[in-house]
Image 1: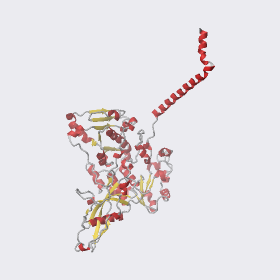
Image 2: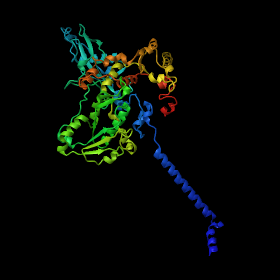
Image 3: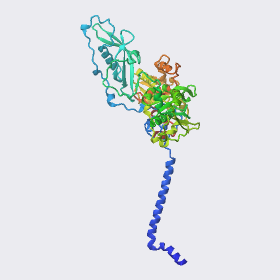
Image 4: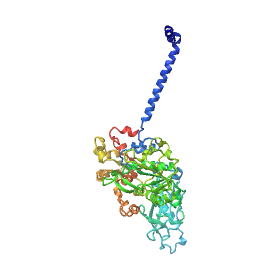
Length: 557
């Protein structure tokens, strides 16, 4: 029996069975390799963390707006790009600017001139309106006009104020701008009207506000209403709930605590827009704290500063008109009044890993996300990581820069007649750190700048220099070839006599507001971006990498 059994077991190795056995072995080997490959791919997929596009330069941020990368941060004192930076103007609307041929040429009527020479200028006269429009188009040749408001009386009988909406001819942003100026008008013996002078930026204060029931002025077509209009009166008052009934019927989301406070503005927006995105996904009103903590990287004291109003930095008027938000203080006041009376319930979430998708069916009036004290798990933006990234989109289009700050930008550009070139010169700590930026100090010296700019910018041009170099006399050698301009040349746009100072003081409960580091960086950068030619430090002036030695390939990818 034993012999027969042994023979039967070795029968499978007979010559006639070798081909079949080889096929089975090859099949098993291929299956084993397939399983190993799947296992390796699974491990890589589970542990791979794609590069954070926020580490890239600003030119790459369009990709970051739609990316699905993990949201990690490093300290950054640059100005974050906001929704209006990525808007593209409607080409039809942009093309519909007013030409001088569209405006009638006023012709005096000599038969009605007797006794009229000494009469006050009638700012409501169509001939005066046409004269002022033609004068503006002829004088300001580097902008396109899209709307003229009806003139109103100025400071005396020979002046009229008029407002207009415009864009620079070579404007790269989608924004419109509003200006209002004072015109000095004379009338000759035959009643011919002429403009003797046009005031500086925003001198026509009587034309700033559009009067109720005022007839429309002159325009070819209505510009796109969704584009920002810098220079209009800002209405960023806090929204209020109309009644107890409407409050009780509402659904709300609030984020409490966390480690995001006093971080960079980039970090703040990344987290805030995660919360706003979740609120929109859940179809809830976001309860937001308008009191920010400004990071020490932006303050003169080099300390974090609490109590900064959101509205000083961002366009709350646009946000409240485009999304459902409430101020935190107002909300809790209403909640304390009506929560028990109307039986409003609160749903508490203390784990950021509980996704918005799991909260979609919650019926309670208020969802409160409460964050702990351990960083980085207590960062708000953690809610939007992982599987949530492909579901909850950050609504970048809802965040615009403060129109009050942008009005300062417009004021500087207007004083330069929107006809200037710009250069961004980074020095400061980076220029002193030769280990990471070995050539920066030399490459941004006055002699090196003159050499670099001579082939890029024509002699005699207005040159706006955006820089972190505190001593602007450092750039005096450039004055031999260019008319140089710096941010501090325009301090009157934010000093105690300015519209910005008046409005921000009122917004801040009559306490004066400091024009802080982030505001300076923001305005300086935005003026730079409006230059006809723009020369960057790390792209045009030096071979050093923006983030230090051996990082150029990473920044460019």
